[in-house]
Amino acid sequence: MRTALDERLIKVVPSRRQVEFQSLEFYAFVHFTINTFTGQEWGDGTENPAIFDPQKLDAEQWVTAIKAAGMRGLILTCKHHDGFCLWPSRYTKHTIAASPYRNGQGDIVREVSEACRRHGIRFGIYLSPWDRHEESYGTGAAYDDYFVNQLTELLTNYGDIFCVWLDGACGEGKNGKKQYYDWERYYEVIRRLQPGACINVCGPDIRWCGNEAGDTRPSEWSVVPLRTKDTEKIAAKSQQEDSEQFRQRKICAWDWDLGSREILAQENDLIWYPAEVNTSIRPGWFYHPEEDDKVRSLEELIHIYQNSVGGNATFLLNIPPTTEGLFHENDVRRLQELGEYLQKAFAVNLLERATLTASPETVICAEWKEPVAIGNIVLKENILLSQRVERFVAEARIHGEYEKIYEGTVIGYKKIIPLKSVRTDSLRIRILDVRVAPAISFLGVYEAVE
Image (cartoon, rainbow, N blue to C red):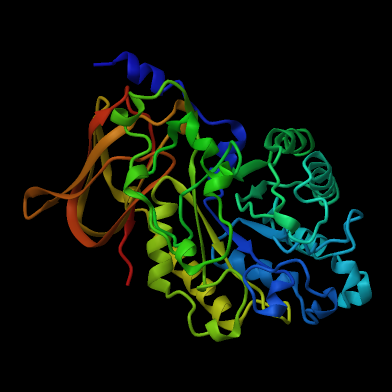
């Protein structure tokens, strides 16, 4: 029976830019700056640009490698906390123009954005609000002017931008100066110059999952309390320094459930705010040669993919170029392996030879003349009609009796149910609890592969 709460919840729906963003599913982060040459994760802004000289930089290699993995976008760290710019910004001398790269005539933002477009990959930017080199940091409006000027350069000179990634790192400037970012001003500039771009993490469109380890919640809801959009903007809780503890922190128990009916019943204001899961293919975000043998295993990456893309979130995987300006061969090999796995795992939809039946609203059943081996089940809701399913179960007929093979809560944009290899001649999906009538838009049942 519909309740007033359920009616209120399904009125919360995504914007067009959010729908388009989530359809990318899997995309790359590329952390590359002067830190790559100092061996640091966070630079302090005193680094000499003369050390920045990636003599073999090949944006084509980056883009073809991520495309081979099945990624559809790339977000470049155009400026990290050290303040060094990968484009020749007019507003500071601490840029690639002061380096020996291409005799001071280089522009890596342009090289990467153009390579992305040649290969049909969406291009996004990361611009750190915290600038440890800039003298005006901590002076208020003067620094906001500086940040907006650089933001404007990136949003007007490099074509279509699908994402502006703003993190919450907010440390002190020189002499203990603190900067209180004018977020609303930043958002206005982005919306005006790139209206199709999503603003991630410290922004209103895509929220951070809450850790950098690739962990996810069992239920990752898209309809959540409005207050969650300010979580990463609270300066006192922001990241003040690089630490392994922060990078590998777990999701806290207090925010384990952000969007169940029980939680949202206590909230007055709601927002559509889907999650992004971000992590690096290596322990660090920037390249360190001592981590060449610490590239995540294929099994780890598959697990994160299944729980992020397959858990109503998106997956942002970082690949850091070397000092030569290339992805390391170990990283490239792993990306290739991941892409090959994903192609095989979702190649054969067994529903093409099944008989489908559905009862009103609650049960979808697929039957085969001969038993099939199922490796993955994929479910999708029509999120234009909000998130509706609260609980469902998948059952397979084995030796003449139906057995439960999975029980879950969230479906949302996409739910992947990974199965070892379930042999059955009949599969049914039963919707056990909904906010209002379910709107299942897709069901895929994929053949198990070795």
